[in-house]
Length: 181
Image (cartoon, rainbow, N blue to C red; front, side, top):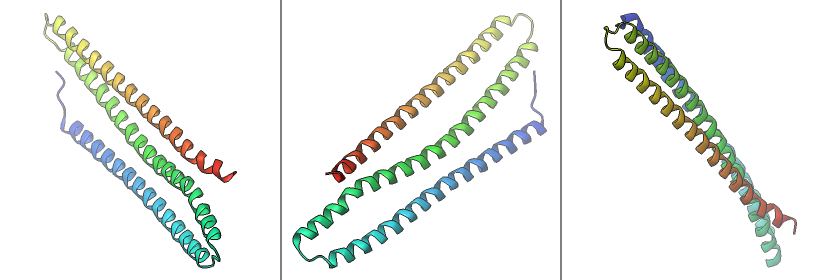
């Protein structure tokens, strides 16, 4: 039977720590992008409010005020949709990085476990072929189940992204169609 050496354990722990710090850096990059998006949106909103306030102060009658308000509300939906799209892009790209890392770690763990099972099978005592076959079959079934779950998660993510894109495009269409009137 294969026994882990101290060097193998240390190497595994080192790899785990490197993965942890890599994922932590990716998480911070995602947070930085969100903060940057929020700062940009806040600056733009502040600038627009200042301009709108100046325009309201120069209004001469009620019709001009109503027209000014309508002009403000129409692009608001587009801006909200654009902000949501940017936020979604940041979240999905950060999530994709995490998924990629987790899948890599899972594949590595599966390979190591398969090697361990093969090593155990080679060193198994005579007469244990049936038990080894059952163990190999169980490992294969578990790997197949994991792959099926990963595919289902990817499909669900793609469907959610597609639905988000449909919703985002449909919310910006009424604003653009009302501008054309």
